[in-house]
Length: 625
Image (tube, rainbow, N blue to C red; front, side, top):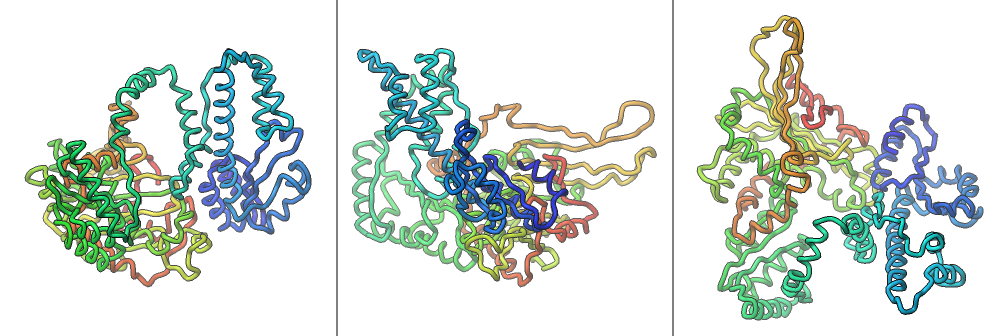
């Protein structure tokens, strides 16, 4: 649908209606609708269900969109539905149709799994010698479990009750995964749908070596693993909760020999941080016979004052050495590899300075719109959400000096030095944008000035980087999701080859996600007579050299580091506060953000910002942008 809507866009006129009746992700629907809205074209999303039943009975239609547009299409929907007044309905605003269909398909996954397990049980009781086709036929009439899915079951069993010609491999077109993702984001338990999706994946590997090994390990390891899980219910504000927790931990120390080691993880709303920290201190849980540490999730404050207050709250109970402020970006292997690439290869570090580097670009792009996070996002915006943490972290790792040794103190010292060397940011160094349709998002204030895009020019005033601009950009509703760092080197001082009017500058691109890779772009001679040149790309891809599943989950690495007491990849208090000192003034910029179309690379003012460097934004991992 994405390509088709793009192809159709030039053919559409104001007032036209584009209908998407496919199994599209509702988030994509919102983005496409916003793009078409800027053209005054209506977008109606229709979730369609019915399968082969639909050919004879009519289709179930779940419709989202503008009421006036849906009303114009009513004759079409009445024709396709089982009856003019049944089986179809306008369920809500744009996106609601595909969202409803997505949940519908998640339920369908669960029903299909239930049928499969039920008939497996019927077949397993061999002494009854049940005729499974007969049972399915009985259930099809008058039973509470009758459905079109049961019709399909009966038809399959009529041909062969053993299903001997059918491979037990079940595909997944995406809707089940989308439903599970939504359940995770909304914090809504969906165990049946989740397990049904898992069974589909399991069906694809029953003969694999991994499945056999897993079966061999499960019986040996699961009991021991499961017995180490414990649950304690209580209220955040109730002191008794923490007394009960202290008693339970003491009991586990005695039973399991954990020697008093504690790692508290505050994966809770930030408003609860002070309450929980204070109660942990009052209960004496801030120290023990072993080590005690506490992980604090971001956002770490919403401005400098709140970050300082939170640091003071933590330091009243825990020492700085006990506090681990987690940012999953630092746990990514590709982010950590920035330093390895620089400092483990003698050919690159000598070039990593103002003598050879013209400028640096850091892009963290998101394809999704704010969606259901609009209420939260409108209080945050892209500067607080992305720049204060992720982008400044990438900048410090790119610009920092080599530490004297690899340990938490030295590494974080060098990062903080970069932040202190950043030149004060002037208004002409900042571009703010907002995608078209943002003010229509549910939960956004009508007079909101919250930016969903920002481009920033920074200077690191030290010997290494004096005069070299760092261009940072990030936003919602951009063409794709990616994160990358590109160093553009200075052009050659003299054009030696007359047949080449210009030579593209060398560029080094470190691609953090989704295509984890490193690209070096340089000129080479075109084969044949003369000295004509062309740019080429030398690339390293993690997946090709280490395997597609080689990169561990970021949180997996960070949690292990916290358990081992390695704070190198966690933010320190002074680093957090200095980042807020830099970003705070930008959040009060009085300008109204410039509008840009969803699916574009942001407002035109961002292009003008970097064109002052006589270049444009560059994506070394995609060769566009």
